[in-house]
Image (tube, rainbow, N blue to C red; front, top):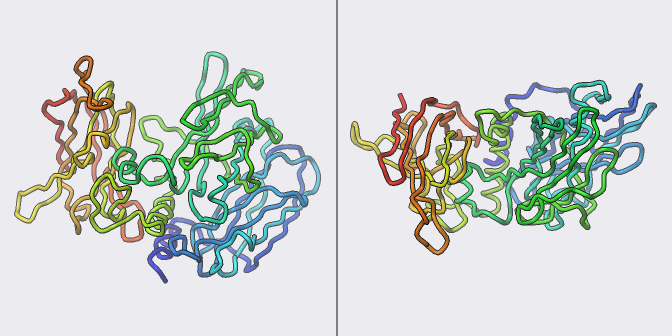
Length: 442
């Protein structure tokens, strides 16, 4: 069994053992007492599948409802049958037939037989608390250059809820396994603490009676225009259209995905907390990095490659950065007693610093052989924000306020996040170029 398979199988240890049926095709009939939106969990794995091995990446399943195409499901998590929650969309009162079978054309050549089963179908109705949010969740069409390529697969969808002066707004985001364009891999780690691509894709505001007031989506160039595209029942149709997974209102592909949208509250935590709730996402993204040649032994910064993800220390912190920039350094035990080695997250590059307020992640590679028990301290430095063409700032940057360090962890041998070794809350003010905040890890 390869390292990639071991990583994915280990990621599944948190799931219950479920009864499965060995088959490349499953059919289910179900009755609906009242029109609503249907959800189901596909329970699947595939023999010899390994997301990290070219030619054996995954089996791909085609889902049909009443003879009509619904979506595809990529079995990206290896051989063991695990849960893939999906949304089936609007279903009318009456009896329905669900069919799930292997799509031979899209499955990897070396992938073995799929094992497929399902949960019972759950139908959400207008009287249910989560019906409104689930009935408006987008359906995502594949980017054309990912079809059959086993890259940048949408792994999760979640939504956030906020009250507005006019009613309620829902914001839907997707976690992709990576992005083939946009931010370099090493810069992703330095400023976002991950190699997945997390993107807001669609937002909708409703009044108190449930009438839609406004819709928007994140288009190419990170523009957020009004959405005027098509819907399927209440679900907007979006096409991934750029290599960094921005979406458009139309496209040429017919392959699509509808992972079940999960409600998530991100108060005092970063978006990456969604990945923490699904630790297997770290394993999938890590083996994808290796398969795509984005890891190396000790690559210099600025070359779109990173050391092994298990050599990184991942930190979630919160603060107000304002018009400044920050970097975190990790202090690790040195060879001599009391000695400490410091590794900065920006790796000496100003563009690798964090320049956004709120809660954020960084990840920085530490010396080979470092274990969580070797972590000794965290240092936060504030800097003037980099300016285009190294132009001098119009005025000095204001102070930075740090308020939280939520998590400090490393990945284990199977690319899964280990337990956090440190947490801090307080209020520290830092001046760009001034003394850093330094906190010791007990």
